[in-house]
Image 1 (cartoon, helix red, strand yellow):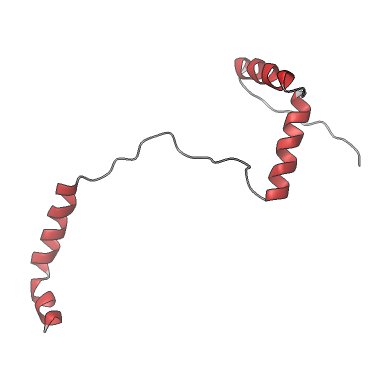
Image 2 (cartoon, one colour):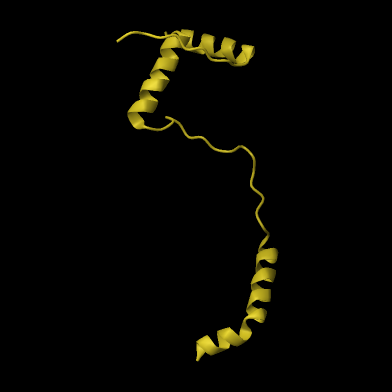
Length: 84
């Protein structure tokens, strides 16, 4: 199968760090990205976990309880009918 050239852009410092790491592992940048692509195709997914680094704000228990209480009061008659 014929090889093709692929061009990617990345931060210069990141490229230097990646080159050093891959070299220590006995790989070229090209070999490392080929390994990544082969594993991604084989597994049909990105071969590592991707998640947000931003913490998600959660409602406090007090806020959740306040909303629940309002709903209970608003629907007290319906809840009473259901309890029969």
